[in-house]
Image 1 (spheres, rainbow, N blue to C red):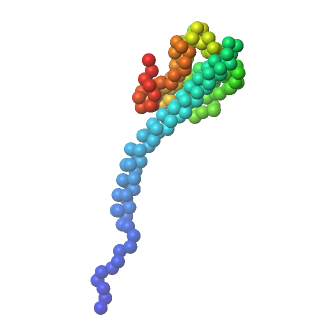
Image 2 (cartoon, rainbow, N blue to C red; image 1 turned 45 degrees about the vertical axis):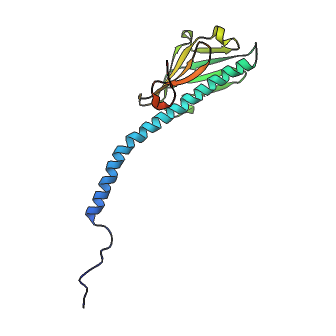
Image 3 (tube, helix red, strand yellow; image 1 turned 90 degrees about the horizontal axis):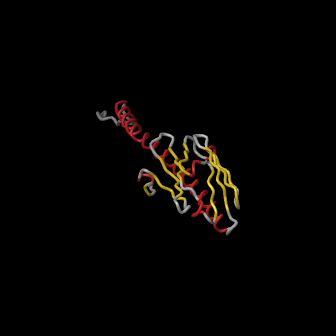
Length: 165
């Protein structure tokens, strides 16, 4: 007697096409979200590094006493850079980080030179180093307040920082 039932092995073409369509739809939803996450992460990396460098320059100048000082020279734009001279020398540029982060200065007495010293609360100009992501959707700022302290903030709570003044 011959069996009327045959075992089916594998997938039909229709099942395979439906699976591929579902994966494609999920990818279309996930890719923009993933790009947004990378954009925020790149901006956060740059912002945290600049904030740490500026605060370290300030703290080194204060720790050195009356003669302690540091000078921070900044170049704006998409090909930005900054260098710190004083007790600890440091130079960084946009090429050290993920591409596409824009840097702009406001305040600081209208100068691209930021001076810090033990007397920072007497002679320090307040100002902002504004950073904008590659897409332009996200921004963060390193703000030097009237007391001479550098604070990291963002206009969007999604970055996880305090809201900028």
